[in-house]
Image (cartoon, rainbow, N blue to C red; front, side, top):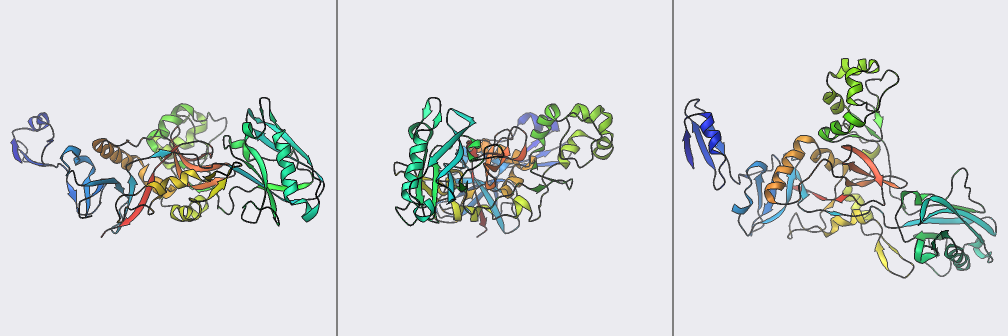
Length: 442
C-alpha cells in the first residue's frame, strides 16, 4: 500500500496499518515512511518471532511488525530470536513453566568411628530448629556401613521430628545403604545415605555447625554429586561480587528506595548500592556523584560485566552440558517412586517443535549467558512487544527466573525480579523456567 499525507500530523493521525505494509510520503517534509506488517527478515538481525513453515523453512518476523492474525495458519511458532552473531542465534521458547531447582536432600555417611553417632537435621514444622538424631548402631561389620545400620538410622528418623511432624510420613527423612553412585544396595555398600523426600527449605542442607557437632561419623551433604558451583562474578565497575545488575530499569526502581544509607565515604566500585536520596545529597557519596553524574548511570555501571571472562559463575560448564549431565538424574523415594532430582534443568527436555533445529532434545534451561542478553533493557523491551503481539506470556523485569548453573550449597543462580539482578535463590523455590536453544542459519 502506498499513501501520501500532507503533514506529519496527518500521518500520525492515520495510525499504523494493521492489514498490510505501507509506504507513506509526507508532502510537507518529503519524508518517506515505511510501516511494515509481518516483515520477514532473511536473518534474525533483530529480535523477532521465530516460526517455520510447512516445508520446515525458518520464518523470522520483526518484533514491531507482527500481526498474528495475518500470519499463515500452517506456520509453527517456536519462540523469539535474540543474540544473532552473523551465523548463530538463540531462541527463547514461547512458553514457560515453574519448578524447583532441587527435589530432594541427600547426605552421605561415609565413615563411622563409634557405635553411638549423632547428626542434626532441619525438619518440617520448624525448619529453623535443629533436631538431634542420635543412634546406637549394633552391627560393626564393614565399619558399621551396612544395611542394619541404615535400618537403625531410619528407625531413629521415624521417631524424630518437630511437634506434630514426627516420622517419615510427616518429615520425609529415611536412610538406605548405597554404593558409590548413591544407588540403594542390600550389601557391600560404601556409604549410608540419609535422604529427605521433601525439599521445602534451604536450611535443610545443614547437618551440623560450630555449635551442633557431628559425633562418631563422617557425614556431608552429597545431593549435588560432582556438579560444579561458584558464587563469583565481575561487575562493569571491576568489582568482584556474587552478582550484579541485569536489568537497569528494575534495579533503579528497587535501589532508589531500598539501597543502603552510607555512614562513611563510598568508593566508586563499592558493590553495596546506595539509595537515590543518598546518591543525590549525602556527603559520603560525593565521589559517586562526581564519577557517575546520574543515579541511572551509577546503577548501569554496576551491571554484571558482559562479555564476561571465564571466571566464577561464567567459568563453569554451560547449560547444554548441565542438561546433558544432570537433567535426567533421578532419585528414589522410600516407597520406590522415582522422581527427577533437578526439576528446573529437566523442564527444557519437554520443549520441542518439529524435527529440525527446534526439536526436543536441543533445548536447555536458560543459561546466565542467555539472560545477560535477553534481560538487558533494550532487548527485553523488544521481546515483550513481540510476545504481546504473538499473544504469549510477556517477559517482565519483575519476574524471577532460574538459570542453569549452581551457586552453591542450597542456592542456584537466577534473575531476581524484585531487584533486577543476577542473584541466587533457594533451590526449594519455584521461579519461572524458560528454555533456550542455540541455532545456526541453514
